[in-house]
Image (tube, rainbow, N blue to C red; front, side):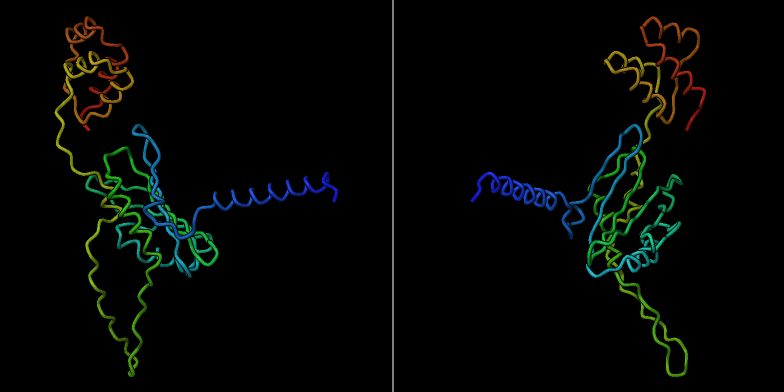
Length: 252
C-alpha cells in the first residue's frame, strides 16, 4: 500500500466528518422548548426586541398562519396583514392604558415535517418583567397548534345548529398585558437641587441630560439668579441647556 497516497485520503475523510459534525451542532435543535428560545436585545436608551419560537409537528405553514390569524385577537393582538404563502404576519398589540400600541411580527418557517413559529415583539425601554413576557409570548406562539373551531353541521331541516360554547381558558397574561408597563408611583418634579446632586455624585453629563429629558415634570429655577447659582457650582453647560429645553417643553 502506498502510504503517501493513503494518508492524505484519510485526512480528507476526517475533515469531512468533523465538518459534518460541526454543522449538526450549529443547527438549532428541532422541537426546542419555547422558553429556552426566549431572547432579548436592545438598550434602555433605544428599545428592547424580544423573540421566542416553537416547533409544531405536522402543521403546514398555511394552517399555522390561518390559526394565528384567527386566534391572535384573543391574545389582545390585532393582525394588520397576513401572508400564508410567505408565512408572515404583521400585527400590533391593542392600546394600553397610555394609548400605546407595540409592533408584533410572526414568521412561520417549514422545518421538515414541522413548522417553526417565531414571534418578535418590540417595546420601548420600560420596566417589563422578562419572566412574565417569556410566558405570555410562548403562550401566544402556542395558538399555532390549536385547531380553529369549525361551524356545526347543518340540521336535517337545513338550519345551522349553534356551536357549543368553548370552555373558559385558564386566566393567563397576554402578550399585550405583559407588554403594558406596570403603573409607577408619580415621581416628584425634578428641581435644581436634584440636578446639582446628580452632578456632585459624579454622573456623566450624557446621563444627567437623559434623566432631565425623560422626567415627567420639572420645577427648575431658571431665573437669572438661578442660572448664576448653577454656573457658580460648575454645572456643565450642556446640562443647563437641557434644563432650559425641558422647562420650555412643559409637562408630559
